[in-house]
Length: 261
Image (cartoon, rainbow, N blue to C red; front, side, top):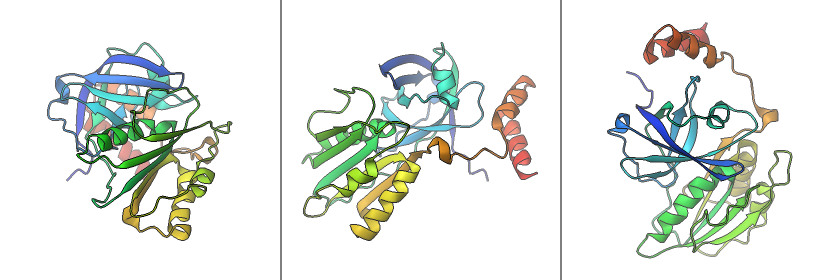
């Protein structure tokens, strides 16, 4: 039985610039029939764009049953960046079924959210979800972003805006170590560069001694110096397969065979 996530075909219907490094992509179409939100506020989907074979993962900013909105960070290079910065409206894309990991305990008295630009869509949606509760929970946010995103986060949470140190680096590990933690039981959620997230997990386990159910820390991306080249580049296999009229399943099989050889 295949373990691949269910896929949906869609069309990019709008592309809006939110800031110099953040684009809003709206996809829609009959191919999204059957797509359902998990209800988890940090849920994400895989996005496969034309000319590429591999998916990249993005937070579902919103889904109204007709249009799926993804806020995408633009890097210097990247599979989606190369496509999203062109005249791509009208292109067909593929998205996978959503998954999420945010699991705040029912008895949490406060919520701390920390992240860089890649975490902004999830932090915004989580914060909105907290405000919709019958009894809103005290929420604090630390956002390390290079752009002015005034108005992106909902009114209500206490927000601390941080400027990145530059050169693709992040200082979020030091920020978390300096947090004055609230009393009582709460939940800590954080996302950003993978190496930073590993350091944060160690801090939470060894210094803060938090139980695993009290936090969720995820690596959303890897710094350029830590990226490892792929053993098999999926791009040429995808393009040649499509040019030959092969189905997605056939191309997947060829890719899997190439990786195993």
